Amino acid sequence: EYKIAIVGAGQLARMMALAGIPMGFSFSFLCESTDDASPVNHLGHLVQTDYSKLPAEEIYQLLGKPDVITVEKEDLDTEFLKALTEFCPVHPNPDAVGVSQNRKSEKSFAESLGFKVAPWAATDSVEAMAKAGEKLGWPVIIKRCSTGYDGKGQWRVSSFEEAKPVVEKAGPDENLIAESMIAFDKEVSMIAARDRHGNVMHYSLTENVHKNGILHYSISPARNLSSNVIEQAQTIATAMLEKLDYIGVLTIEFFLKGEELLINEIAPRVHNSGHWTQIGCNTSQFLNHIRAISGQFVAPAPNKGYSAMVNLLGETPSEQQMRDSELQVHWYNKSVKPGRKVGHININDTELSKVESKLKQTLEAIYGDS
Ligand code: ATP
Ligand code: MG
Ligand code: MG
Image 1 (cartoon, protein in one colour):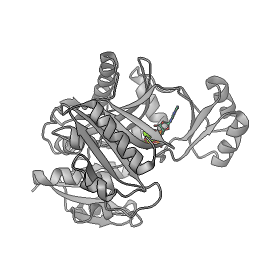
Image 2 (cartoon, helix red, strand yellow; image 1 turned 60 degrees about the vertical axis):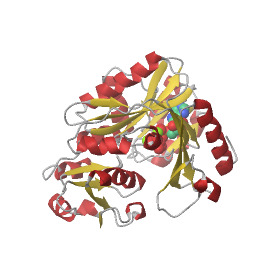
Image 3 (cartoon, rainbow, N blue to C red; image 1 turned 180 degrees about the horizontal axis):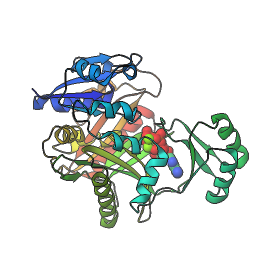
Image 4 (cartoon, rainbow, N blue to C red; image 1 turned 90 degrees about the horizontal axis):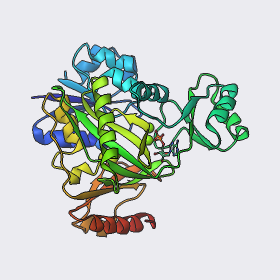
């Protein structure tokens, strides 16, 4: 029996396990005592404890001596992950997790490979903020370098007067950067995977629409892209996977302006913008991640037509949606709170226009918008 342990017990852990169980893998999950582990109920052995205080060997034992350990989030102590590598492989490797958990290191990494990121400057002091404003021009987005997600830990400011209190309040120990506001045509993401044999696969680029910093819906393949943009994104993903000696699924978020791709951020894991692969490909991002980390080959995953995904943010699907055979509803087994990611709905069709109209109808029904 091949055992996979996942650090984290949220919906990404849930969907990785749901992809791996049919392959005969068994799962265990590690989370903090304050985490909500309901998404992984009944899916494997749960270790819920404040693990940062425990020796790695004890954690390895508690997790049932797994064959491999993976992660569902980047906000983890890399020293803790490194200590676990004494007992079994950790994929993606802790250094790769480390690069992507801090905005400065991920931007420097992308730039070191010759790729473009949104123009940025460190703003650890009020003086640095003033210089950053001169360099970038106003408005800017100030971002916390680590622990931010879903647009949390970001401040949009249009002048030095507005920026100053943000930097002062953060204090000298808090790492901040400022980024130019990009007037992008669209946001796209690349989900790619690399296995232990060095094979790389890419999913089609996905078009993402955010609302209040949170992913609202996605469409894949992204519409109206030139082959040049697609090739650029694949080249960037392959270079990053190889440079990081990365095993598993890696996600890269981009701003697209004209023919230019600017890297926004990278995530060392399966990603919300890849949930459509559950309906749109024979091998989902979750299954390819499991295949990669367990020593199998990643499978190429050509698109079955067009797909879309709508996030359920604090919303429960209606009876009608549950009955609709054209909608694939995923529910994470979490309690519903305003704005909380509690599920998603996947849509697929051979015709783009049908996916677009179904998407519009679903967005209207759930959010009253389109
Ligand atoms: P995630 O949940 O994807 O990890 P996050 O909190 O790390 O999100 P970002 O991806 O940096 O945040 O930003 C969230 C969203 O805010 C982006 O997807 C984009 O829509 C918008 N945004 C962020 N930075 C910029 C920018 N420099 N210019 C324009 N829009 C931006
Ligand atoms: Mg992020
Ligand atoms: Mg993001």
